[in-house]
Length: 548
Image (cartoon, rainbow, N blue to C red; front, side, top):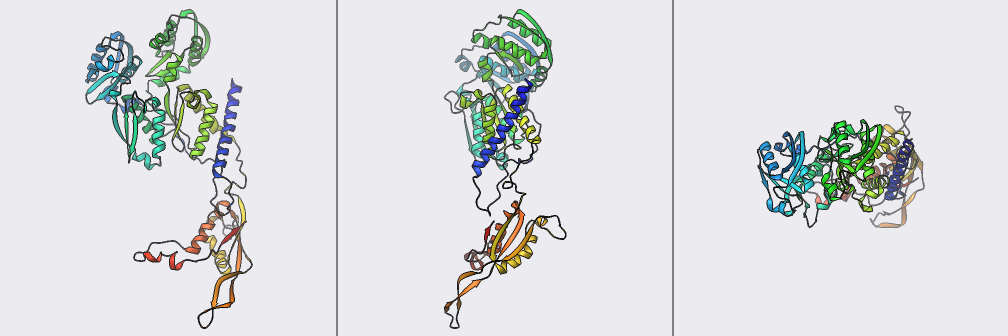
C-alpha cells in the first residue's frame, strides 16, 4: 500500500507538471520578436502564502441565533406535530407546518420522527428532517416546515459581492462556480427553478433555504480562502473525524447489522447511526447477519470493511456518521474551496490542474464521466469542488503531494525561458542618439544590473559600434528654398551591443520608444496639437531596430 501511494504521488507530480507545462507552452506560442515582453517561466511557480484557516464554514454563523440553541432530546417515533411544538418551546419561534406542501409528498402531521440531540444545536435536528423529505425556512419570527423541494418555498436573497469583484473575480466565472457546485441540480430545473443573476455589485439568488445557506457559505470562503474549506460543515463533524483515525478492535460473529453499528458507536463514543430510511427504500434489512473481526485498526478502516461486506457506504452529514446506501452517499456530496494560487497562475494552468485531478482522483466520479463530481474556478487559483468527502480528502492529499514534489524538485529552466539569463542584443540607431544612450541608459533602466566601479559584479554592459550610414529620404534645401534633388542626406548610424538579463532586454524597447516619441500628455487648451510626445514633437521615421 505504501509503495502504491508513493507511486501515485510521484506519478501525479510528473503528470501535473507536464500538463501545466504543455498548457503554458501552447498558450504562449513561439516567441520570435526579441523585443517582445519576456514570457513567464513555465516551471517557476510564484510563492503565494496558503493559509491553513479556516477549515470549514460553520452553518451557525449564517443562521439566526435562535436556531443555534443547544439542546438535548430523544425522539422515538414522535409525531411531527409534537416535534414542532418542542422546537417552538426551545426557540421561542412560531413553528408552522405547511400542511398543503407536506401533503404533496405524503407527509402528515402524525408522521413519526426518530432523532436524538446531545448538547447540539437545534438546526441539526431541523436539517435531519430532510431525510424524510421535510425542509424548513425562517421568515421573521415564523419557522415553516414544508416539503424539501417545493418550488413554492423558493425565495430571493440579494448578496453584495462588490468586494469580490474588487479582488478581480470575474462575474461570469464567479456565477458559474456558484451554480455548478452549490446543489447543481437545483438551478434552472422545473422542480426548483433556482436562478442567479448579477446586477452591478449585487448577486440576486432565487433558491430554497438550505441552498441559500450554502451560497452564503461559499461566498464567505471565497473572501478568505485557505488550503481547504468545507462549506456548510457543522463543528460536530470535527470530533467524528478525529475518532475515525483512532485504533479500534471489533469481533462480531453473526450479529445483526443494527447491533453491530450500535456497538461500534458505543465503543468509539461516536454518533454512528444506521440510515434505516435509506435501507428500507433499498429493501435492505437491518437484521442482516454480520461477521467481522479486526484488531487495532482505525475506525475508518473498520467502517470501510463493514460497508464493503454489505455493499453499503457511509457519510458525515448533519453531525452524524450515517451507514447508508451508495446512492444516498453519492447524493451527500459536499462543497470545498481550495486555494491553489501557488500551483496555477492563470485559467489555462487552472484547467491543466483540473484535468490532472480528474484523471488521478477517482476518474469515473466526475461529471464528464457521468459522475456527480464537479470542479470550477471562481477565479484563477481559487478552486471550488463538489464531491463526496473522502474524494475531497483525496484531492487535498494529491495537492499536498504535488506541493511537496515541487519543493523537492530541482529548478530546471532553459536559458530561453529564464528571465535572469544573460544575453547580448544589438540595437541600431543614429549615432548621435547612440552616444547619448551609451552614457545615460545605465542610469535610466535597472540601475543595479549594470557593471560599474560601484557594482563590479553586475552583468550588464553596453558598447557602441560604428555601423553603416543610412540614406535619408529628406532633401537639402538650396539657396532659393527649393529642395536640391541632386544632394541626398546620409545619417551616421551605430549599434549598441548590450549584454543584459532577458528581463531587462524586455524593457529596453519601451525605453527607446519613449526616447523617440516622448510621453504622451494631455495639455489643457492644446487638444488639437496632440500633447508632448506626439503632434509637433513627434519623429516621423522609425529610428531604432534590434537584432540578436
